[in-house]
Image (cartoon, rainbow, N blue to C red; front, side, top):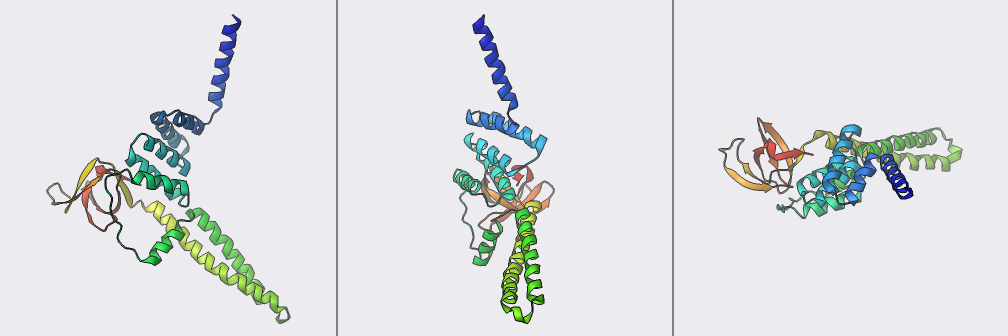
Length: 251
């Protein structure tokens, strides 16, 4: 009898511990137990109940990666990067997932200033850049006020105000430009991941169009124009054509 009571108490305690876990913790426990499909289903439920987050997309991407489903893994990593563009773990796992897909497409040459600008933009999210822009603008105003109102007899203070105002103004302009660029990038939804195992890219938005090339699941495309059930896409080497909308998932 004592053994049964102890067993019952143990079960009750274990149940209480499980029920005390947050949905994220339960999904993480399923992932750690290698029940990856269960983890994905739990993350889907969390998205419905609580909305999206970079952590949710990242964790779900990891579960899909472990299942060998690289297209949804890449999709989730890409969505996570839109919310947390400077996260090195997301970038690393995305690059790892991209090594698993069939298409290895060369990126066309990009002007170095554009590369630099995109790298700076991706340091932070749009919200973080906006905060940096506001704070730097306020510091610019303080420095400007000091420079204008400090008397000639306080030249060192006047110089300090100038050397604070000038860089803060530059940082404010850059931060606000990056905030706008990041916000546009996350709201335009003009990129997608190929979900079809294999899809022919056509010269026109019709099955009768000439086949230009073939794409495989996991490849990232840029969306250009939509006509009916077809969408015109461009890949990273500059080639473009039409494929069925049903074959992609928008990031």
